[in-house]
Structure formats: C-alpha cells, structure tokens
Length: 446
Ligand code: G6P
Ligand code: MN
Image (cartoon, rainbow, N blue to C red; front, side, top):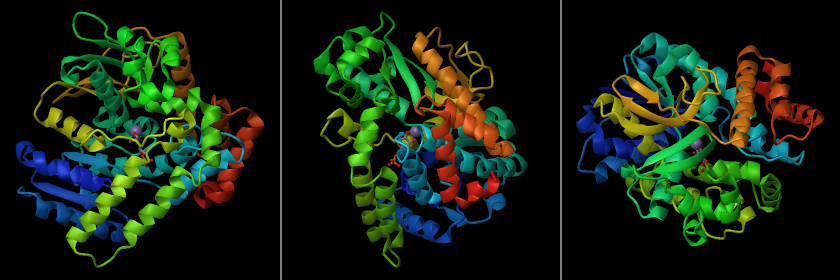
C-alpha cells in the first residue's frame, strides 16, 4: 500500500508518521512519500521523522519529493494538509476583520472565508492530479477550512474525498470521560458542519445520557466545553456545542480578549514556527527534541483567546495521542481493513441532515468500511442550530463559487451574510482590507 502526504513539510506530519509507525505493518504500508513545495521545510521535518524512527523498534522508510504527480501516482491514500499563504496569510486572515471590530480567527468568520478563497484553487489542482494519477486513491483532507475545502474537491474526486477534524471526536471523548463511560460503547448524536457542530444526545442503548450531564454543574466544570460555555447556557441549548461555536455565542467577548492579548494566534505561531524551521544542521535527535517542545507550547496555548474570554485560566489539556492523526489513521484502517467503524467525518450529506442538499458536505457520524464512509441519518435538530447550519452552508457555497469563478460579488456576499459581520459596508471594508494585504487575492479579484 502506498500513502502520500501532501504538505509533507508541515509541522504536524511527525504526528502522522509516529502513528503510522504503529500501524503500517497491520495496514501493509510499503511506500510512504512526502510531498511539499518547500524543500527546506521538508528537510526539517524529515530530520524529525528520522529521530522518531530511531526511537522506534519499528520501521517505516519514506522518501520526499517536490514533484506532485510522482508523489501521488498510484497512491492508495493521499493525506493532504497544506497552508496556502503560510502563517503570514493566517495573520492577515485574523487581523483584517479585527480592524473592523469583527472576530479574527483562522476558520470561523471572515478569516475562514479569506483562507478558503486562496486555498480552494490550489486544492483543485491537487485534486486534479490525484484524479489523473491516482484514480483509486482515497483523499483524506485536513486542509482548513476543512468543510469548504472538502466540498470543493468533491467536485473532482466525489465521495473519495473525506474531510477530517479532530474536534468532534475530542468533544465526544471528553463528554464520555465526564460521564465515566467508555466512548467505544456509546453512540454520539453529533451533527453540523466543520467547526459548527453540536452534540445533541449520547445514547447507551437504554437512554440518552446527556440530560443528566447537562444538569450537573460539577461534572460540566470537569471538561473544556463545559467550562467554556457554562452550565446555564448549555442547559438553554440542551446540547453541547463544538468549541468553535464559542466564537458565535460569545463573539463580543472573544473580540475583546483577542484585542487585549499580546499577539494573535497566527502571529504567535508565526514566531514560534519560524524559530523551529530555522534550525539547520541539527542531529535528528536534536530536531525531534526541538519539535516536541515547540509542539508542547502550541498545544498548551490552543484556543487560549476563548479560554481567556471565558475566564478559564488553565492551559489546554491535550488528551494524549488523540489529534487529527488519530482520526486519519482510523479512517485508513476502517477502509483498508473494512472494519465498519463509526467515525465523525466530513462527507456528502446524502440524507443525513434532511434540510440540506445531498451533495452538501456535512460533519456527522459515518459508518466506514471498504466502500467508504456512509453518513448516519441524524433526525431532526433544534431550530436555531438548523438555521445556523443552513446560513453557514449558503455562505460556504458562495465562498466556493467565489473561489472557483473569481467572483467579487459572491465573495462580498459570503462575508456580508455571515452572522458575525454586522453590515454590508463592513463586509466590503474587510474584503478590501484582504485585497490590499494579499497580492494573490488582489490579482484574482481585480
Ligand atoms: C484544531 C482544529 C484544526 C485547527 C487547529 C488549530 O485542531 O480542529 O482544524 O487547524 O485546531 O490549531 P493551531 O495550533 O494551529 O491554532
Ligand atoms: Mn478542525
């Protein structure tokens, strides 16, 4: 089996490699290829992977290339995590809306729209290469904004493109822990779009366990979403939202917190990643140690602005080896070994959420086996969640259209219709701000 990682010089690639070391024999992986457009980033990450391989008793040789066609040719799985415009672009995505008093965040709000506008065209090229050179490959997309990007590339790759995010499974695991139950024995009624989902029920075969949890402030304080949203608001919703909904429900507080923090998330990461990637000529064990401490700081400070706004003073507590690499491996394992496991993924809706079109990409539980993911029907959902999902899906689809047709009107409409943007004039100002700071956007939408 051949696996290709597009965006092979990315900071989180060692997580995928470490996870692959554990399962590659079971999956029959005999070829791993890393692709990137930047040889220097690739070289730093290769060094970290050598460090991981030296520590491990297992073997998984890999090679690197900047030739996309050769990288994906005849692959069985193509994992894709790229960042078009790098972290410099993220800083722009986040800071332009803030200058208009609107949330600045990489995937939620105007930032996600701007990020999608420059990412989707690049992703279409990758998808075309995969369609041509690896027609049987499963395309596992981590590239953000993952829901929009997956929906766009499905135009080329159909159901073979699957979007992944670690936040729904993280939420389910934390809720299971708060309930004192093994998540593997429970069914999680989680529905929505990427970074816009809710857990509306937790079933153990006898009953829904969520109402009792929502009634118990003590247990709610024991996990991140409980502390972020607060028991009172969770009881009003009757559901537990994905952490990214903090930016909708507490938009004003987040804008304040971001404005008062030293630097935006993107600016903090830009600095820290620059330092990591600058190290040249290190031994592989030094590179691995540097990567580990950089990663530790990145995890600890994840979503700090939301916790700050919510008055939660602790650091983020990553739950062991449970990031997106775990989800990616789980999908590959489920398909390759036909396990028919349930995983929350971004796939075409079919009739999972009855109020959305069949081809709209949604984030819901899927049964995953050799035939790919098949989404579960999620039944009815509370009216306000349905309305927000419908609105955001409309915005996502306008953004995809804007990216593919270079339509300035659609881009501005997507921004103006966004619930976090207070007026059409503000939307125009944000769009102009983006164009002024991103030459590729200026060129595409002139
Ligand atoms: C979570 C989200 C990802 C996102 C990441 C950002 O894992 O699910 O979609 O990329 O957070 O983390 P960062 O360290 O880049 O702020
Ligand atoms: Mn995500």
